[in-house]
Length: 261
Image 1: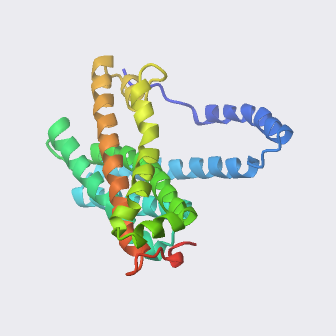
Image 2: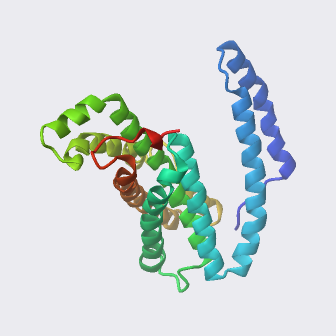
């Protein structure tokens, strides 16, 4: 038994909640109404197009096309990370792009080959959907890590320079900022793993059950994807900071102001 379809008209019923939402925002003076409406409209348009072209990608299912689509997704994620952290694209694009590409590629190949053991490890059904989940979490993790790392250094630059003046290397002086940023970036997913199944039924598991899979199969998929997401995000945020350091500091170990927008 497959998932029950949702009538497109039925989705408009959510507009009912727009009235109390606008009312609450108005009463507590939250200036987010325009931003939220813009985001919702953009989400609907983007997902509508995704639904159209993913059908063709899944039907065509050519490895080269599937890999190209993943690369496009990583490129978009990189732009989103840099825009959110206010780091200049021309300085930081390649470090962040590579920091996502490496762990996502390794985990995708490992997941498809070793965990679910499919014959075609570049099958669009798995490559695109699993890749999207890995990328989504890596994106949020990298935003937190990079934003914390560079904003913290800017705020405490004297402490960093004092460590350098005492004879410490750049890596030694940056270590406290590095550790703090990594912990901040992985705290949400660690908390999520600790409460999963108790606080909420996660997306992969719910999707599997709605699609007709047994709860036992759905649980195994959810465990697998959560571990894949955690390791991908952990290594991605580590690499993003390490790769970006070379572009973020000059030969005298001074933070470059030109990397910020």
